[in-house]
Image 1 (tube, one colour):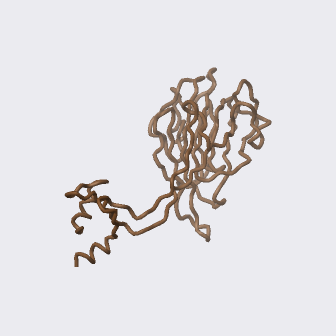
Image 2 (cartoon, rainbow, N blue to C red):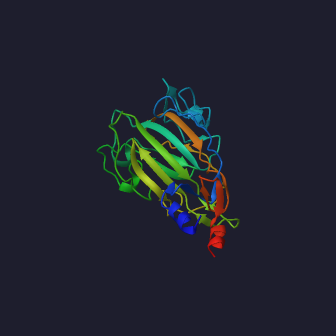
Image 3 (tube, rainbow, N blue to C red):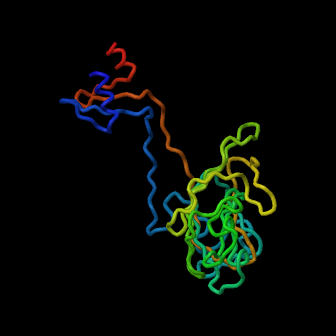
Length: 268
């Protein structure tokens, strides 16, 4: 087998050369991914999810006793609620609804917020025909970027956020190595696409990063508006696992494998 055959194998996953079937094998030997059973219907928690609110109570949250729960729905009450458990890189599903009885305008209408690691806010707001500053409307990263589109449903209807969160990384000297990233799908519409955050999301000062560790709680804001919530779950995101090896080719006709160094040696 010549180096030409090996290079031809790079063109596609399987290349036929004469009677040989030559395949390129990448430089990683991967472990089998874990099996996750999807929910019974769209939006239902998969088998590896941590259910933070399934309709019964807010026992998974600090201060949950101060938010009323009725008919499987939690209503924003007095003060923030914060998960008792901390999370790092994660996928977060939240369903919420602005009040059907519209009161107020701008930031005073259906306002709440989802805080990743307790510090980084994805805005919750009734943005259906309700103008406000763009980096403060629904699905914005508060005070940093507007959403790519306004995908709001009418007041009283249910909205869905599917959030994909990557925590910021710091070195041993607490210096930022890599920012946090967020991707958000709002009612099936991509509204944040791997956006790199510039730090936390305060109203009164520029954003900044502080190393609070690799994990933090999820919090939901009380902003004085009776926003409703249901079906909240989270699942940890873990990278695929594998071991590095030398890239090689395998001849499926003979079962023989060779690295590119071995091919070079044969050719020379």
